Amino acid sequence: MPPRGRSRPQQRRAVEMRRRLLDSAGKLLSKHGVEWVTTQAIADAAHVSIGTVYRYFPDRSAILAELADEAAREISYELVEAVGRAMRHDVESAALIVVEALTAACEKHARILAAGAGPSSFDIPPYLNRMTVQEVERSLLPLGSAIPRRARPDLSQNELDDLVFLTMGVTSSACLRIALQRPPGSDRDRMVAVTAKMLAAALTAN
Image 1 (cartoon, helix red, strand yellow):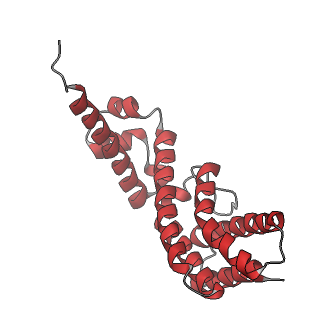
Image 2 (spheres, rainbow, N blue to C red; image 1 turned 90 degrees about the horizontal axis):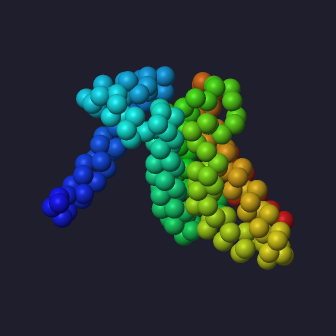
Image 3 (spheres, rainbow, N blue to C red; image 1 turned 90 degrees about the vertical axis):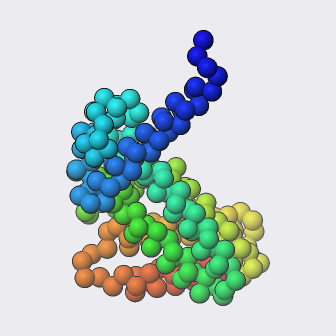
């Protein structure tokens, strides 16, 4: 009979190996781009056999999907922090704080968010699935709900919900486009400012 507690070190080693493979894939992605992230390249970078990679992940898509999920969680965390700061400001300043934070967070994770997306595509990048987009949008809800509730007492609850639904979706989409798809030579900061003005206007317009 094996000694008690043996499974715990094995579980820890499994968690550590999984993390090692993800970190190796992330470094390849950051340095070379998604086309370099193959299971063999990950194995080589992690100094393990290709069989070890397949023991933890069925294919490269599963690895990229997990990296995208981690990126979305980090983006949401940074966004929640920004929304907390924004709530202490007027509408225009609050909108700018949030749009800047979301755009910067998407830029930080641009490689994985854009993995597999064509340069002219305006769809959600393949590895940024709709659940992760919804996670980002949920992080915007405190800002999106509080401001129009104060500024638009004339709206019914259903009208308020519709306004929040539209403005949060448009804002997250605009920030993704600025971060991942803006044309060469475009003014990034001006795009952020325009998006913030659009958000502030939409939340307060009568």
